Amino acid sequence: MLDTIEEIQTRFEAGGYIADRSLATSVHLARTLGKPIFLEGEPGVGKTELAKVMAGVLGSELIRLQCYEGLDVHNALYEWNYLRQLLEVRMQEARGVEKGQIGRNIFSDEFLLERPLLRAVRWEGPAPAVLLIDEIDRADEEFEAFLLEVLSDFQITIPEIGTIKSRQTPFVVLTSNRTREVHDALKRRCLYQWIDYPDMEKEWRIICTKVPGIGDQLSFQICRFMELLREEEFYKRPGIAESLDWARALLALGIEELAPDIVADTLSCLLKYKSDQEKLTGERLLKAIAVSRNFKAGLTLAGGSTAI
Image (tube, rainbow, N blue to C red):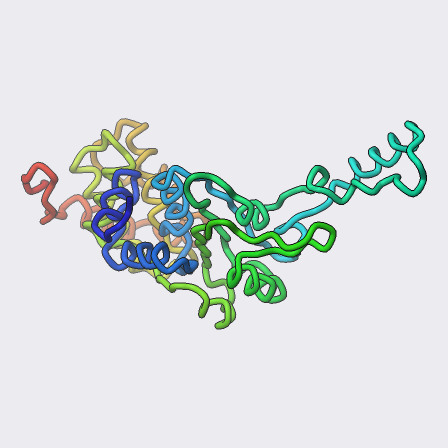
């Protein structure tokens, strides 16, 4: 399974993810070489979704570590269940266990709380686990340094238990929105892939795949409108996640074609900052809608006919 680049593209598309050949090649090499894949790009372009789809394709589990400022090793690796340990000591005292034997078992697997990294290393399923280290750029540099050892050897040392080595290398996906630069030492251990905003044809395919039932006219108008929006200097340009939200919203409202009032009413699906919404008003909005409505798409549907 997933022995070729073409098979990866086919299986991903069946899972609702349109992967171009460059990205599919990186996924193939990451599996073949046992290396993490580092995905960088603007928010909402499908970095996190890739890991979710990969888990589904492999029939394995997605283990997610959401990074944030102040994330420390214990929250990412493991913790001891101190409350259970304390209760065990009290119960042993009540049962009259000899003093020298009280608490000798509390640093065992029974009292260990697995966090994402340890869970991925100890995974024993039939297929490798998919470990998603999401938004690594939000974590501190100290945590990056800690990751270097884990990603190099896929083993974890717990002083009270010993060294635990992974029986099968997990498929590791790291994502970054570039809120800060990630250290070169971490990138060197990974295959790097930049995910950009999709072109019109790819975005249309994504929308048709993820929003079944949407009409050709509306889907093409959405893609053209999004293309125009991404040419503007917004504080936060809308990604494919916003395109899908908007497409689903318009479909739920029974809309078949873009119109000024409809776009104005649903703008909150696309632009999440007041300053950006204020930029897209008046003549600017009307022009974008007019261009989108008059757009004659040169894309070919799966059935062979040219849309609109």
